[in-house]
Length: 204
Ligand SMILES: Cc1cc2nc3c(=O)[nH]c(=O)nc-3n(C[C@H](O)[C@H](O)[C@H](O)COP(=O)(O)OP(=O)(O)OC[C@H]3O[C@@H](n4cnc5c(N)ncnc54)[C@H](O)[C@@H]3O)c2cc1C
Image (cartoon, rainbow, N blue to C red; front, side):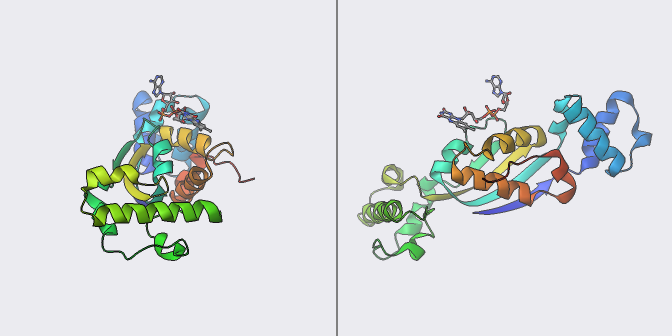
């Protein structure tokens, strides 16, 4: 998977939103240590967490499976724009036959697990889909035989409050392995001076 943080709100915007309550703008150090401490104290420790909603992150996420997408989409306090299989499946039509051993070529389209039997079955499903498309069947019918491992990509916009919730839930070892990887990759892509607001659980 590939994560690109396209844009984010500077910390000073959140600090100023908090300072609005007390009209203490003159105490700001423009997103420096004083502002960072204020955001953590009010947003996290005092649980005035709505102030964290002023920090917004725009990510571009590539190479995740549709299995992961299904879980991702359960996080309602975020906005998603996802690559449409209805409009993009034709990318597969120009490919030649996939055999079970074509894992490198197939990995352009599939998230592989490293479990030989699962990956071979996934490649078979990809080949079945290719045959359906070559037959001339429309994308919006062909998509019903997409494997869950089929790769997709999306733009994802989320505020800091909701991202805290996402990272806590999805970096936990009880979460799907792929979404755990995603949670860690999202955290890694955050600006260094924002990371103190977030926690990810260590891998086992
Ligand atoms: C390990 C794990 C296993 C899971 N297994 C399953 C499963 O088997 N089946 C399944 O269906 N789902 C499963 N889920 C999904 C889970 O139930 C949540 O839908 C998902 O984690 C999104 O969490 P959320 O509601 O906190 O996030 P968001 O939807 O982003 O909501 C963020 C926060 O906003 C508030 N909120 C949002 N909507 C409402 C509302 N309608 N009413 C009140 N407060 C609201 C809540 O405080 C919520 O925490 C699983 C999740 C995890 C982490």
